Amino acid sequence: MNQERSGSDTETARLAMINSQLRTSGVNQPWVLAAMASIPREDFVPEAMRSAAYIDRSIPLGEGRALASPLTHGKMLAEAAPTKNDTVLLVGDGKGYLAALLAQLCGALDALDPAEAAQKRGKGAYSLIVVDGAIEQLPKTLASQLAEGGRIITGVVERGVTRLAAGTKSGGEVSLLPLAEIGIPALPPFEAPKSWSF
Image (cartoon, rainbow, N blue to C red; front, side, top):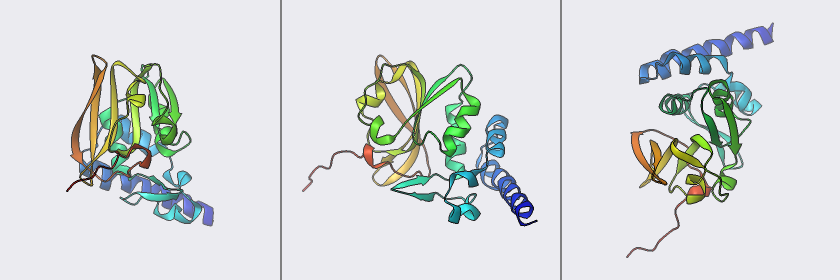
């Protein structure tokens, strides 16, 4: 009985997430809503945080990691617009919530831990890179993994403010365009080197 009630409670919370957080903030793409309605967020948070899985803010996961808010992931998916033709690199937890969402929508999905992605040079094979967090700088090692004409969706940190950003690779270079201010957990491996100022 308790398990039944718990399942009903989380389904109600998931529906409220769709209607009260996503739709009211402009995330209305049917394929985004369907993906987020089908994946239980509570399966990706610590047991003690399951009741908070659908709140409209990030949830600490331990070891410096966090699950971004539903709105952040909804907006990232909407901007990324992955299709079955896309080979996607997720910079984040390959067994996490965003990975589960992307796996439903793209043709192939690889994942790299942020610390590894900040250092590992790739072969430029991915048509889409999604960074599950905010970065202060885009290292060449990560940009090298994006195919010419490929897209990247990430959060960026500018003067302490996080924004959703999108970019494409053209002429071997990737430029990011900040789109909207939104709370995205920052990724320490992508911090810019500290410089002195007087």
